[in-house]
Each structure stands twice: as C-alpha cells, then as structure tokens.
Length: 117
Length: 111
Image 1 (cartoon, one colour):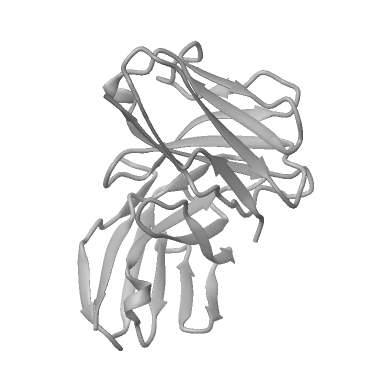
Image 2 (image 1 turned 120 degrees about the horizontal axis):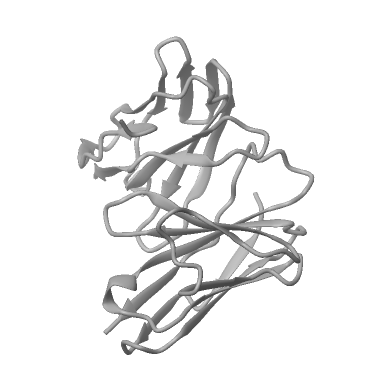
C-alpha cells in the first residue's frame, strides 16, 4: 500500500489558537487529497477534497474559513484549524490519491489527534 | 437512511473463532467495496478490496459481496488477539466518486 505520513500525530492546544497538520505522500504523487475527521466511536466524515494547485472543495457543514487546506505540491497537503475550540477536538486523517488511480482504493495517513482545551 | 449501515458492536470472541462482520447499503451504484482495519489512535489500514459481486480470499480473511441484497461481509478465520481492532467497511461508485464508510465494528479477540 501507499506510504502516507502525518505530523504531528498528537497535539494539544489552547482554545483560540491555530493548529497546522501536515500530510505527506512518501512514495507517489498525490494529485488529490481527502481530509477526514473522526469523532470517538464514529465513522470517518469527509471534510474536504483538494486537488494540487486548486482550491479545496468543502463538504456541507464544514467551514472553509475555519479549516484551511493547502495542497501546493504533489507530496504535501496541510490542514490548518484556525481559532480552534474544544468541539474541534477530533482525529483528523488525510488520504492522498494519485492521478493514475481511479479512486478504487484509498489509503490513509496515520491520523492526527487534536485536543483543544 | 444512511448510505452504509454497520453494527458497531462491540463484538468479543475467543481466540480461534470465526468472525463475521457485515455491512448493508442502499445505493445500487456502489461497485467498489473495501474493508479497513483501524487500531486505536491509528489511521485505517486497507485489508480487502473487492469489485462488484463475489468472494475474495486473502489468508485468513474472506470478503463477500452480494449486490442483489446490498450486503457485504468480512470473515476472519482462526481469529487472533492481534485482530482486535475496529473494522470499517467502505464503498464507492468509482470514477472519482466519494467513498462512504460504515461506523465501524469494534472487535476483541480474547486469548
């Protein structure tokens, strides 16, 4: 399977601060990046989809000004949670795909656990 | 109605048992079916991938898809304590369409 890394793996921050999460695809070029959020005992919820060099497309109910996504290169995408609040505490997981795939398989990063105090 | 339904469990079995995990879905356009294993505080790991109906076997794992019933299954033979995890089903119509995930079934294999 694809090798995907995320950094940091766990972050604790104060309410009102911003947190940046990095996702790297290590062995292929990710033309598309999916960002998911997973609350305890719940499934993955798609937050947004971004294509390299383009603006991200956000799912209904996800604030684009709060969750800033940058996908400036084929190996790196970042998700910035701005002015984080306790309700943003969750497990954030990225999933890159390459242009050669037909979206038949998805591989995931190891996830970033965000705790907002 | 949710796109994908999955019993969250928890499911607890003795070591060596056969485990059956299931999902049902409502969208007849789904063609691609996946099972993921997720350990606590980790990202999902792809276990099995199946296209359309039929069975697929990989070691102790067998995936079955019955499109007529909109029902998919994952069987784990000779279950091991290391199989203890949450198992997520996922499916897609393909062609760049969104993936839909089940809520996950928590499995514990007791030594």
